[in-house]
Image 1 (cartoon, rainbow, N blue to C red):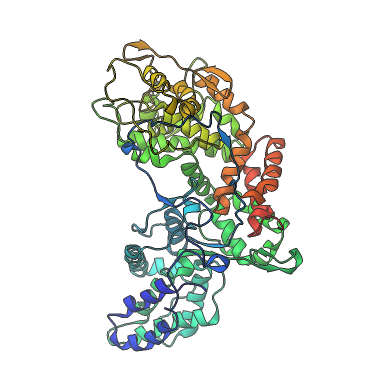
Image 2 (image 1 turned 30 degrees about the horizontal axis):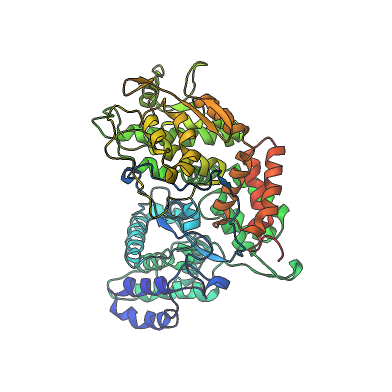
Length: 591
């Protein structure tokens, strides 16, 4: 059963200043406020909020990390995984809107300039906030945040007749103009709920608006403001309700309904609500061909760029960049504008490979093309641009900065305040780019480097000595030889040739492939057999809002094969994922 706790609370709060309306509205509320406020519904309603995946965790702060950490002696080789190593079955879940989805949805509903106040923060699960969104609910304090955000947004909307006319299909002027109110709220509600409203839902909103309008000193516009406020505090808006229905034609497998598919497509390809055209075409989304047709249209829309950005920010763990705290005494040139430029560069670089000049996505590992503004160009040692904003540039042939691993965003995010962090850099590459799991240190191992070390030792020397400990060698050997290949770039991604007065040694080894420096590491990653399948698995995880399980294995293999055969084109991979049975069914294959 759909949870109406947040919605019922909205009724009370919005009518507390109109005493005459409370009695009328309270009767509506009583029938709704009977279920628990959770983020799970449908077949999984009795399960734990974190069931089937890792526990959702707040976005970490990169600057708080204590050090590289000790690791157990086993495994001595990484475990490559694109599915959860268990027999877990996929279940239907409600997905709370991520903060970016919430902001994008408000803008699409009410206007591009609508104020978007802070709401409940995102949680990471399996590396993606979209997965975390299926395991969390609105917190007690979050209810107040959503109320405040809705109030600010609707106050802004109703303060300007031009904004109101643009957002509503009809603007009623009197409490008797119920036909206009019904048209306005049903049309807006269809997009907000990602499906048509029932007659009961529409009538409830209209009744609220007219009841408040009938109070002394009130008006129909005040009533409509409360109705819209209620609409965007409803769980039908704050959650993507995608539970599926048994499909007799598919052996009774749970299949997402036509409007649920519209919601899933909009979330994955646009990171927002469906538009009118997608909702109008909902009946065509019951088969793969209909999904593909709409997906192609959607990828040509500018909103596709914001969805790609959301994926990139999670895939490359840019929360570490946001939390990085470079020591100003060590890195005096680091600024907040440089931090933002680093993020923009990474996002533009990937966007260009997907939409600007669609090409082999894996070429990002060794490409010399990027995007910089004047501040970032100076940081990278490039000539002044002679213009404003970001521009496409190509690093010189002999430049040591090559590929996406040479971006300041990753190098800074994967560093400590006062120095580089090869272990984290290596672990990030294992996880994000190779889907290889490095286990955490055992409970009896101190996850810190020795405190009494020679201050003149390089980090390579320190980590080499650290790996001499049997308790730390096994897993550090999986990370350090990769991360040390990035030592030519300091803790804010600036190129250097010396460390502690000694020449940089950037040699390393990736699963038996030796390399020297970033360019050779990038080439080794591009040629790694698991690089393509890993990317496929990451997108699949983000799009479905859950980690893959064993029953996804055959489908993931097929997607990876098609991805490679098509030249590793990410735009085509997006089309293939959303048209797949894994995306269209709760259960990707029959038991």
